[in-house]
Image (cartoon, rainbow, N blue to C red):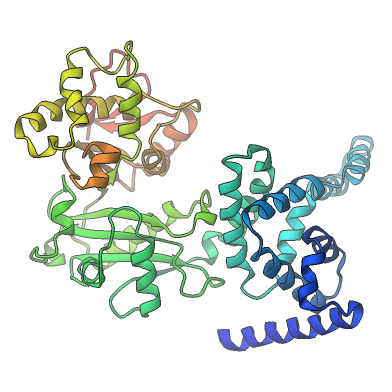
Length: 455
């Protein structure tokens, strides 16, 4: 596809549309400050000409880009209050369906129930580079609803549309290697969210050796913008620590001698695409891609952080009647308050068994109000059909690893024959498939949410 040609074509359409608007209203560009975005959006919904619609959509997005935080919140309030369903039309369609149920009246009812802001966002997406701008806008919405949950209705509509636009059928899997354009490699460094990439040498050590791989999903509307990427290590054994994987001085392994593919870092690149689930597709497609290259690979696991563990431990330690923490645990857990504890072998030994047992409780017994795992990484992998395979104390002794998980990391295992069964167990009832090794760590009297895998 000649993207330059289509870019010039869209720009030409926009230029013609802007000329049309200027002839109609003779509005100088600076006057956008005196015309509210709400009125511009109403005008866009009323436009019928494609050229003028493209120009107006571009004008709206350009004006939005100049808004400050308070002005953005006011704009989202207008989207919530002014651009919902047309209630009169919805009432008529509902009455028509009740009096004469049919496919036709049902379709009319469905159309009438759709909020006007969905069509508004579709029309905004006509402008050049609009998809990226709308992803950024959705990120701003997420920042806003943390304080204004009443604006979640706007977010729902964005998620609905973005999930369609970023459907798996539109995504392209590309391997990230040293031959990629520098602009893409720079973004991999910037977007890495699990284990910081310190410099170009660090990046090269992760993507260039024969036993390392990195893959990303891309979308045609976001040129040179990775959406999500995964870093993979090919190893002989299931890893129990992250440092050997990240060690620049390690001796590379011949991929033909590897038996394990380790997904050790998965990073979402755009906050505005949070909740648009393509991570599971990425892991499965990468597993298939690597399997085609190396038939000797038999096991696919992660080496994953536990970002919610320390916060949970703080809450449990502050609860005298905690069901997870035994009285004998509290002496060892007090060491966590000392910054130097990882350098003291005695304290490390005292904490290892306690933290292993508490991590098992955190994963297999503790749950949120929806009867799902407290840990966001666990929800992702368990929801995608993985099995909780092993728990490793002192697996990540970096400052970040100690701060968020007291050094613990875990393996989730993806067994292709069991993925669907495990996924159904978790999504239907919140039950967690765990290996017997993890199950043995559990001290809880009644771990009702656990399904134990004996393999």
